[in-house]
Length: 150
Ligand SMILES: [Fe+2]
Ligand SMILES: [Fe+2]
Image 1 (cartoon, rainbow, N blue to C red):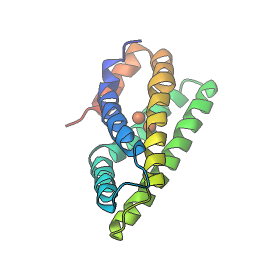
Image 2: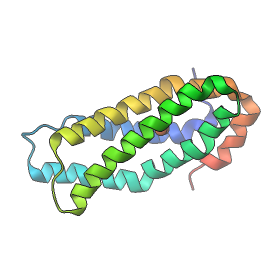
Image 3: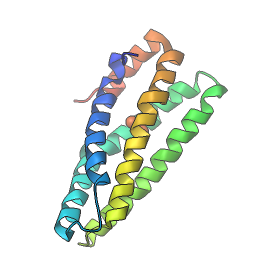
């Protein structure tokens, strides 16, 4: 299904997230501390420039719009929120290490990468199609100014 134009900014972020996720997922215990620090810096950069706002946009705009469309959507909403909290926790773990000047564990980086990719695929394959089906053209168009990037 072709993505509604209102959701394009989020799908654009998803593309970046998948690239970072794949990079993180390749982390192994053989990686040097400098390689792991570099990945942690990339997590910080993407968190500050895209991911943090992206999560908020979904939580503040998309999920309430879906909730308005009926109780049958709650399982999707709750799954999405649970995945956001899990990802926020994983990102925070990596950033705490970085703040302390320590290289994060390869396993933690790889798990963050896998979880991020799985979350993005879940939204693209399940949540966004449900949203597009439930909202209709007018309400989807109303979301556009809230999701637009300056
Ligand atoms: Fe999300
Ligand atoms: Fe997303």
